[in-house]
Length: 636
Image 1: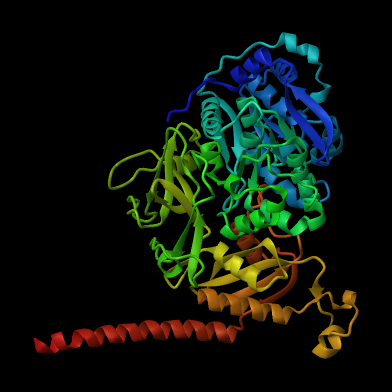
Image 2 (image 1 turned 90 degrees about the vertical axis):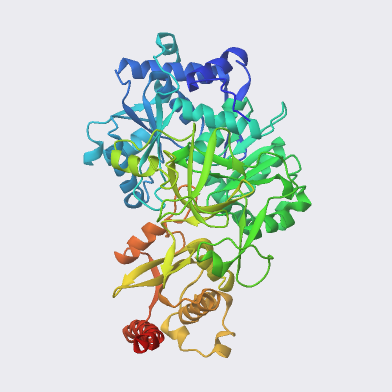
């Protein structure tokens, strides 16, 4: 199946919609997730984009990079299109949190310095509140701020269509930085149109299709799937802010129920969040029977999450068959694989854990001990090839082996902005035994089964202790299941070097209502504690927590823990899509920058004993080997 390229640039797409469906509503914004506060037709979008573009053209900004700093809403859509209409390279970024400026500012500084941006497009409110705060920071000096809602719509008449084609750079999608410093992925108009055309083919849209999204515009999932895809498919879209979803996740499902939404999606944590935060009384008011496709991605999809969501919301008309796990990344515009035809339910594959630790695919029955289950993420989209490669040998893996996911195709981006070395390493890979390439190295691990991709984890997150592979998300899930005070999707497992040995560290947020016991409470016996008022019992028994976590990891993964750190709620580093930034967690742990509630370290004596034990084991293995070779030596 080949994708039909109806448009070569986003300008062609928006202009076509404005001409043929001028008064059709493209987007509706839901304030607080439920109040309609703005509508944008295709004609209005085209006119606003041309006006903003004319303003940028008057500033001689063609080819310049412009940061888009907006709240979620309609303004950022017009600004994004306006940049592309002017030949300006858009750089969508999250607005800085003025309350937590120290936490959000470093990434913004890194982006503006790397992109060498000369413009910031924003709203008048953000401009007045943030510009003064940032004016003294070196990276922002000399940058021109433009409040786009102040641009007169009549300027649209002065717009001059730029000379663009499918190979023209459209925007920079800065990676979330889950494993490294954010890099600007260069997305061309052709990349964007190809990915949109492929998604349009498999989405099974009808004239009655409706989309809703709360995903942020500055993330590839939110931008491409939430904003560009509705535009490409000519499907009305209801937008709400990520904050509205976080505050009240019921708003997302209420929008689905109210507008008879057919297509939506989100990362794995969103469905688990709904399970925790939506009451049975709220569920009784919902009707989710209109849903046809619910995409799910980000971290490896949990079978338990999908089953629990289906069971919980089946009373609302939700069907398991609408779940469609998919795989994508910014370096491939967005979508790489997705289901190509409707199935009764998502596909899962259960593997023997000890074999998986050696990168072997050995299927077994689900539900047994020592089993890891993974979701099938569909087959490659049109004109995209996926191969599984041994990350050390750079040779193609056998069908029963786990390796790094490499891919090629028309959706693969042009490379990283202003970073030739990283571009060559990531986008210029060749398979050593066949000479095929170039491929994009995704940094993700997985395997193919009957053409279906199964993603097992991140290469850079992989924990290797004693020559055995351990997936951090497995360890994190084990702890969450066995110690409920650890907040779901708010923990990280990683390894550090201790005296030349890789050792395991676990950090996790505890529920905000708990804090470490005071000395007075600690001194009480258990039967006395049980008589306390509920408010007085809301203390964290840190010693019990450390013991439970160590025991769970030891029993399920046969690993000794070097350190456990319990964190304040909301403090663990995450990406904009909710992924745990394990690399940042490791750095903050080593730099002692974590917001700690309580911590435990293995005693220096036990660490030395562990090292000595490992050395003795090596000596024993060498002695055994020498004894095996001794008869052959004496025989000569």
